[in-house]
Image 1 (cartoon, protein in one colour):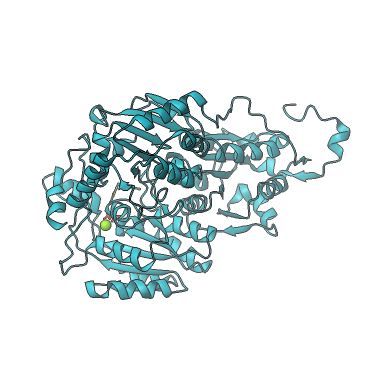
Image 2 (tube, rainbow, N blue to C red):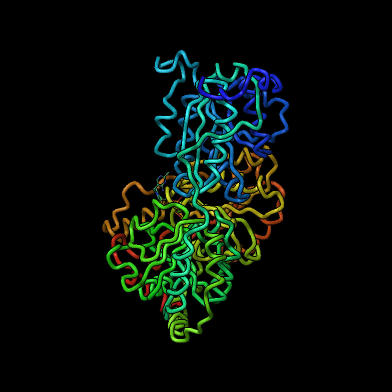
Length: 576
Ligand SMILES: Cc1ncc(C[n+]2csc(CCOP(=O)(O)OP(=O)(O)O)c2C)c(N)n1
Ligand SMILES: [Mg+2]
């Protein structure tokens, strides 16, 4: 017997005998789960039967992928673990994209997938899929439960692994016979994870070395990622930047970790980052990376990335350190703790020349677009959404130009405000993620700023928002193109717009048919009015903005170029 061998028959007696399905329900309640997402099917029915009267809110998406993104949006907005349940085979396969999205962005999700009877596994049984095999590369951890006695412990471990260290998705594959088998349920069962060790505190000598380097630096930059948000270290980041007087640039996933209205903010860096962030990183003498992983969309050409800088790399995941860029001072541990320690040892420096130089870049190359145009500029729509929501909404996005413009033109103030698929770049993420976020934060204004083609991928979930009376808003930046693909084809494929166009439906009509409010905006003058109407709606509301079709995102560091080799700067300068 693998588990519970330490318990005598007598001590086991004091625990109630439950079915596997009941044990899962009890374990979820014990983990504090009050909301879950999922879709039923044959081999998960014993579990669904126990959910019939369980005190857990249950949201049924229209497609399991949508459910996985909802769990992800719920997790990002709340900081809690998102839970998704599916049946075997097609149900489990449908969440692979959602798991990959969460994996790349370090989002805690527990997926419970039904599986065929243990005796049938490997037989090509009806709706059998090798779920653990298929999901291994897109999960932090996965397993199949083959003995009901292991079940309570496995669920506990799943939540622990998903939510600690560098978080990520975990799949627990649950054969139908295990769901009906019975055993004693011990809620205090201990986890058995001897190989899973967390390093939270960081080495104190490394921290002191980092502080000394900061105190000595003339031209430091804080380069921060999603790790700050995951670690709930926003306040510590602010305190460090203020106390030591250091400019801060954020990755796409880091947006919200530092208030962009503060003078230290350099906004986003990287391929479509600001010129002032990219120049600052290129010229800095000390790069302090926190909870960021030097993704290629951030670094551009590795050889020349922050080439003259000493690099401090603070991350909870030792595998991320020095993976892409050398780390002169690595510090492994939790960002919240390490920043709190760093703050104690850093000193204020004026760094007059450095801040003056940055101010000059900010003046010369602000994010800009043609404000005089009579067409609806996508950037204008996003600026207006920002203004009319007071910069306070929770924003989700699709992938492509819409996502980059949102990152550029919405000014984020706090963690967990911007939810976007960064690592995997999953089109179709925006709408279901908004649904998950609205469920996590019922009182918040949640706006999905989406691309037309991204929206096309999961728009069926609009009906889910209608059914659960979630007042989410969707702003479709409708350029009629897979805009980012078209931009690359324009710039790098001689304007051969090969297969980057699809005929779209009238989204307002689709929205109305699904029970939501639909608005179409074709004139620039109608943009603010439409946004105000949208914000006042109690039902889900879709606004279809027919924007300038061939607008591009600038600046741009073409793939493989250095951060200081940005295209589009002359344009920004002329519109500044
Ligand atoms: C699921 C998926 N398939 C393909 C891509 C590749 N891709 C990246 S951006 C993009 C176009 C997105 O079009 P749209 O949603 O209309 O956004 P826009 O760039 O026009 O704002 C495509 C096809 C992707 N990121 N995700
Ligand atoms: Mg588009």
